[in-house]
Length: 266
Image 1 (cartoon, rainbow, N blue to C red):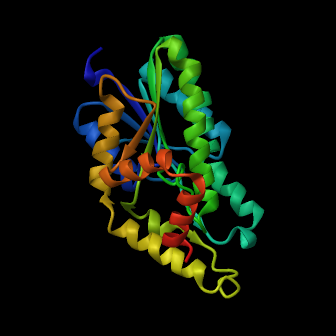
Image 2: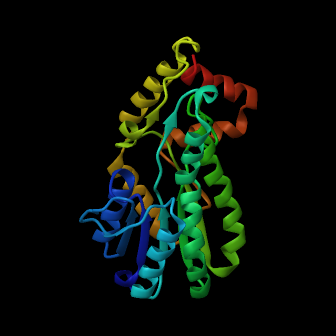
């Protein structure tokens, strides 16, 4: 199949990592569709308005692309957002919203596209997880949990669909300098009761993110993983983060939790 005819679908492609990934793949000659709840898209991809929390909108969007292009080669589940705050003071509905976008949004897209890939006998699914999956971050527990769910789901899906020519990869980025930081829903409730530790933790997170890997670099990495000949089930984005993830396999759990606590919960 010629590169010009390969079709990519990416969610959350109007900003940050998604935008740069979409732009790079379009520049390489791929036919890129971008799904977003926003009314308007960008010049980086063909825009279809679809909220990943709405199963019917997702289904219609995927069917529209399949009807037009006759195949879907690559799906990149990039849509997501973050919340922060103490577990004790986080409303359950807000925690459910975190999972509805970060985890179930991916689930909805994949459920819509897997029958197409199954019939084709090939395809690749890239799910965006996070280094916060194996390294749970205090005061960012629900974000970490949602990304851990993406990671675990991806490993299971990999084994289920591998015999049918479908590849699955979960990418775990570290700190990336994007608009994700400003968009985080910060809940300061309980900061006094927690001795100011919530606000200090968020400040450390935001500093690390805004001084982290650029969105352009991250987008290039994701684009490369999307189109390289073979891809592993788990990939860590960023050299020092690969070391951190490696340490999670070596350190006793208590030592790891206490180390992360000193950084983000002191």
